[in-house]
Image (cartoon, rainbow, N blue to C red; front, side, top):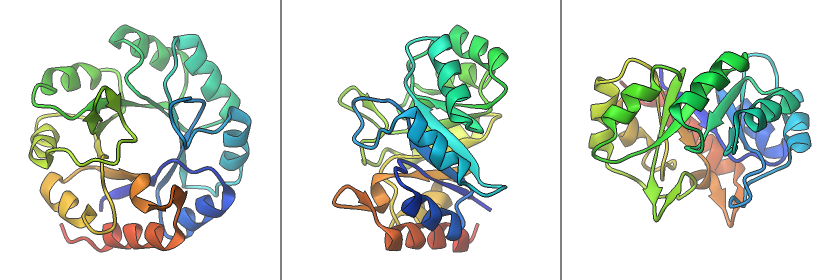
Length: 212
């Protein structure tokens, strides 16, 4: 079964809807100034503390240093840290050794990504494949070439999480095409910039009922 993460959660209402609808993971964008979904570490900590057992908490961060990343992880109490392309391979390796959390490395979906993915797979527990638009990685709300994504899944040894422009209308087709370990959504379950309970429920229903 394909797993699902609802990302960009900013309040307990959206968090609770995601959990009740069956999300395996809930994501919090923490202190990323360019993101309208960003929240402070104390807010993230409070939301994470309200999660029930067996639902993973993920912080999405763009740290400038290993120390900053480690402090964010410690301060929020998250289960998983997702790093958006701001640390080098060596820094990610050092972070993995320093912080007892699962590490997800985000990579841009592009034709020449396989070598980078194989390198990151040596230090990350999973890779999150996201759209790259105008120098911006993640949070673009745009779909990338799923055939490229499917090729990566076939040629990499760690779980691949598919993100980028997913929504209730296209997620089933994305799963059938790519066969990812998990799917990740943020803007695709929003209305006017706010998480929409009906869209969250519809997205997760499509994921759970998608035949593989």
